[in-house]
Image (cartoon, one colour):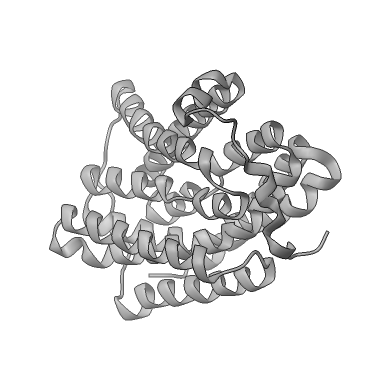
Length: 289
């Protein structure tokens, strides 16, 4: 399989039945299972990652939070529901989506000084503008998209580390109740659910870009801003930008393993590759401010 798909032929995989979107979703039991699994896993993952950040610090939390969660579940079920070719065709869009997410986090981090509401509005405006630009001006060339992502990631992280000088902040000791954990999971899972429902109408390449919608990043940042401090969330967000390289590693592994060994083992091996990548990055992350 080549790293490019001529003429975006993957669009043929996204023809929806001739019914209203809401009815299609309700009638598709497999989609509902996918949605429920994504909400459950992503919600618990984000809840766990934010608690880990508050227990172990922003560097560990930022790295763990950005491991594949709803992306893993979504593309796994996409492969089952719509076929392996569809999931593979979505993979080249993932690096562009992660490049946009780096810009999203950059804007969110830098504008927190103007207040949380303004910061959220500006960061999502930036996300929308650059997502549309990515859809219009990029193509499904995996190699080119990875290069674009690496340049954007390095630029945004470099500015936060050496330009804005975002530094580590001591965490506040917290005790967590079951209710707090469930509320975090519910909030994060709801955000992810909206993304998955919206992805129902997208073609494969665009789905790849939207599949990494910053639901995890936003949920993690918002929880940490409220429960810790803006400064603690900013440091976590900076690390999330750097650790997001594991998502591209996951996408590349998925691109090659899904056609060869199927979505189950392909997902397992791709996740293992992303986990090993993050583990290898940990000594480097400890050197950052």
